Each structure stands twice: as structure tokens, then as C-alpha cells.
Length: 544
Image 1 (spheres, rainbow, N blue to C red):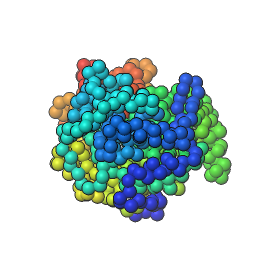
Image 2 (tube, helix red, strand yellow; image 1 turned 135 degrees about the horizontal axis):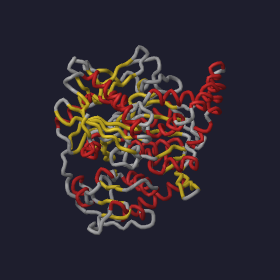
Image 3 (cartoon, one colour; image 1 turned 90 degrees about the horizontal axis):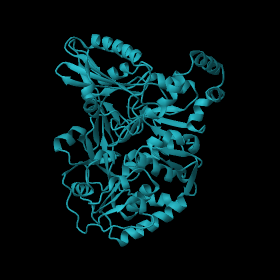
Image 4 (cartoon, rainbow, N blue to C red; image 1 turned 120 degrees about the vertical axis):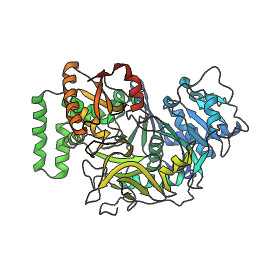
């Protein structure tokens, strides 16, 4: 849809390769990788990263790693993880980013056979005594490459279904709320196009620090590292479980993550004494009579204690990957944060984004590449352009691939949405999660879950079918159980009225404690995994 808020975009030539990443690294004069070490941080400048990558690439080549060879990286976030990824790309090898939680219980030999890997560099948590010489310690790659790659690795078990002949530079994995893992074939031109588009839309500064907390096996996080190299700024490498305690120490200036990255701050505000909340809101309201720049700084000063929760330097926050509550967006605006909702998927990259130049709360913004997003007759969001990151799947059926790739340049997102008159996209939920009531009305399951989360004590909720016409609800809460139960039952009563007699919520599990980033009930992007929740709470479901 063409709008007056078109994002700046410069696309690379279709034949661009990851060699440009090596060029970016060699030209970077500022920034680097910041690591957390006990009560301090340590910066490894990009110049030193370049030296480590060059040395590692030479050792890998000596061991027989060459262009086109698939090499697995299986471990938690670390400097070694990133250095190995960059070294493999420099050699023209194909990094296969194996997500640790999704392949728990699967041996390295089985992973190698499934995806045709010549070698696997695995962290301590992913190694076993049964590993062969083709498996090496990930944490030792900068000092010793103790690996013997398979000279002629087997062909991957899964068949490739491709929509483009562009060269695949890496394999990544994605998983949604259903929890099923897909293997994606990614090509470089779309990555470079997106780096350039984001650099224009959200210009980076040399003193910026981009937080990397989700697993590096999630391609978005690797992409952010490439973005930092391109712009000569820092990345802060940590994990989601360790992120909150390290924020005051690392003082990130840019964050991109799911709502979980921001909800803890709003929760602190909601838990304040009502009189204190009113005082803050009344002081912040004075900004309405101030010029824009002065008003922004005033709000930051009024809510400074909340900015300090991020280290006090956060200047740009992007939120996506899951539905965002309007109350959270409203709080962050009132508190003087620059928080913008964006929309993307691994196959495409970012589709739309809000920016300072054009922001509409409740929408996911305007198109990244002008006139490339359209709405199908059934309401599904379709994206058509030449810069998709993904060129196909491995191990998926032709039918499942065709359901996503409607054409070589057109991807169906599976999301239902609509544009408003100003070109801002508003998402309604997942196409597969539409519930049709007995009255013929269409309701998104995400909307129902959002209603269950409205009580202050409820942090996450999931709905799932248990038998024909019967849904079960799981609510994860903190605080008094009886008060939470009463609030949730009130919400369920209202929802059942909306659903009609043919479909009702008739089972409930109240689970004490909010889901933390390391919970197996969340996927790598910290979205709730409904299938995992169903399995975990099945014996706790009580009839209503």
C-alpha cells in the first residue's frame, strides 16, 4: 500500500554476497562486542574481532572447512558463537544455527545427519561422551579448533523446496506458538537490503549499544550484530535470563524484543501505590503544554526511575513478535520512552515499522519497502518484493511451502490485518487462530487471551482446545490466588457470552508464577507455546 509515510530504502544488487559483511568488519572504526564479566563489562573492539575472525577462519580452513560446507553452531550466546559465525561466512561455509532448546535430547550425530553437517561446534550443554571427532567445543574455538570435519558429509535428510536459485548462505530455524520447528534457507541480498533500510529508518550512532539477549540461533539477533558492524556501534551479548540484572551495567541504547522485554517496567508502575501513580501521571501531564522536545525530556525526568531500570541510556526501543497490550504502549509514551511497534517474520525480515517520523499506537506501522504489502480478500497479509530473506524450506512438504510462498516474490504471513486510511497496518491475529462463534462471528484467540491477561496479577495466558466445543485456559499469575481466580472467572464468563453455546471455555488451570525467559513453555522468541502449555498443565485443568 502506497502511503505518505514511506520508509527510506536502498536495495543491494541481487548478486550481493556475505563478503560485504567482511568488508564492513574491516572498515569498522568504532564499536565492538561488549561482554558482561561479573560486576563489570569488557569491550572487544571490532578491530580485535576482525583479528580473531581472520585467525579462526585460517584454522578452520586448515582443518578442511571450505566453501559450501555446512557447519553447525549449537550453544548459548557467547563471543565465540559470533566469531565462529563470522569466520564461517568469511570462508563461504554455511553456518547452521542449531537452537539449543528446540533440539534438546537430540544427539549431535543425529543433528549432523538430518542437516548434512560436516562438523558441529557445540557448547558444554549440547555435548556428550558419544560425540565423534566431527564435534568440537564451541567455547574453545578461539584457542583451538579441535575438530575433524566429515570429508564427504551425507546429503540432508529433508528435501529442499526452493522458490529462488539465490545462493543459501545460512540455515536458520523458526518456531511459532504451535511449537513446530521449520528449517529456513536464507539468502544474503535480503539481509543486506534490510540492514540498509533499517540504517536509514533508525540511524545508529557510534556510541550506540544494541542489546543481544535472545539466542543468536534466532536469526534476528545475528542480523542485529551485522547491523552493528555496518554502523560501527556496539552489541551487548547476554542471554534473556541474564538480561534484567545486567541492564544497569550494560546501559543499552537500542533494544529490540518481544513485549516481555518491556512489560516488567510497566508492571512496576502498576504495582505502585495508587497515590504515587497519580502523582507521576499528573506531573507527566504538564508536558502537554510544552514544545515537543521539551515535553519529551520532561517525561523522561518524571519517570527517571523507570528509565534507570534499563540503565538510563535507552533511546530507541522496538517491540514485536507478539501482540502488544495498548496499556503498555500508553505507559511507555507517557513515561518518555521512544517505543515503536514493528512487524516481521524470519522468512521476510521486517514488513512494517513505526518510527518517530510516523508512529500510530496500536498499529505495526507503515511499509518498510513502499507498496509491497497488501491484504488478500480473506484478510491475510501478503508481502511481495524481491528482498525476502528466505528462499525456501528444507524438510517441509511442497504443499506446506506453497501455502507460504504464493509465488517466488510473494509470501503469505498467516496474519490477518487491515490498513487504515493513512497506511498504517493493524494486525488482528493469526489466520489459523480464528474462532467462528455459533452466531457466525470471527474472533481471534489472541484477543481472548488478552482479555484473560487484563487482571493485574495475570502475566500470561493460553487457550487451547481439549475436546469438541470445549476450550481450556491456563493463566500464569503472581499474587493472591483467590483474587486472581475471581478475576479470571469473571473474564471467562464474559468471553463465553461472546463465544456462544457451541464453543465454551470449560477448563481452567491457574499456575503460580510468571513464565520466565528460560521457561520451556516459551519459544526462542519468548512467545507462549500453546502446545507445550497444554502438555504441561493437562493434569491441573479443573472443570468450570
